[in-house]
Image (cartoon, rainbow, N blue to C red; front, side):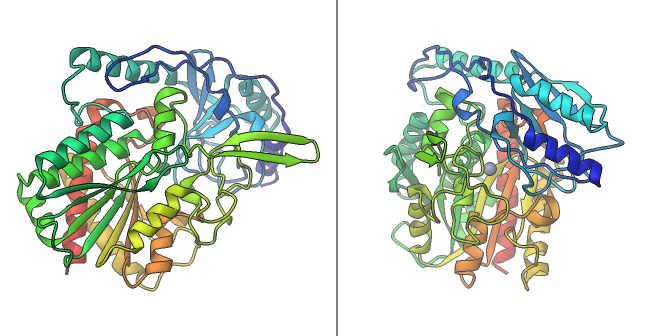
Length: 470
Ligand SMILES: [Zn+2]
């Protein structure tokens, strides 16, 4: 055990002062044309590292100029694990791609300048890293090339949401067109503004918009900016419900009204298109001062900002970290507005928070290790949804509480719904969609997987809707 703690401590103490090398992203500035632009990850480079002894392997995604590789410290025989925070070193610029997990490997990207420090630490800790090459930059380049080509092919045509990731303006346009196409079933509105003044879109899909007596299912997606598949899957769900062309969609709309916040974090999403594909948080600017001076940093983790054991386990007090919890609970307009919108919705019955990646359906509780009294019941319903999901394309999502399958994290949306609104939102779950790991693309999920992922989500939501109506 001492051995692993030694590694964690080394990680904390190590300093890597160089700026990161360019990590090129070609970006879309406007929805209807493409402007090539080169930017870097410098602004997002302030990443947290929470490392300690554990049991699970960590493939490290190593960024070196344009090349990347996974490193499994110690190989499979002597793996390193990650759990809650023991140390922090934002200069190492390690970036957790998948959530630290107790039962499976965790993917971490390492900046070019941190690579040598990480390797040295591993060697000092007696580890023999298993280096796996995987060119993450090429995935991003390929994704950008596809978007460029798609827009060259049909610059003025409607975008294909089943095979393309839309920009934020394109999503707004898509939803405007959908609401115009199905005025009797789709209602688009705004629940407020983001930090940078963008609309926080709300979509309601109902068989009768004048009738508010049906039970309501709320779904939020794109909380974390780089999780593009979550927004794409939400758009698919909205359109399939609106079209009413299959038995499942008809049943789902017959029983419930469906509410969506399809892009909970529009500022971060735009930033992930224009500047940093790996951006996670919103874009709140904050000035931090201490005895050695002041600095400016950006972004609060919106899934750590809800008032449920706020600023507790699994969060960071440092605003330049990816899990920064904000200055207080609901300090961010995105979370405060969504809270108000959901809590003022009559007949609310269930809530789903859609994230990626890891292929999980997470059940309460996430913020503490004790399980709720109705654990067996909420798990039974999630297991049924998992089976329905698997029946579509054979994917086996794992079901469990975050402390059991990942780690405890406070300030999250789905825990807030349960703890603050239990009588109504007893059915509260968090998805982690495809892929399973970084070796299958991580956040840069190939567009060919949009449709299968969305179909799986839809099938499992159908099961949830059926089961909780019993
Ligand atoms: Zn997420």
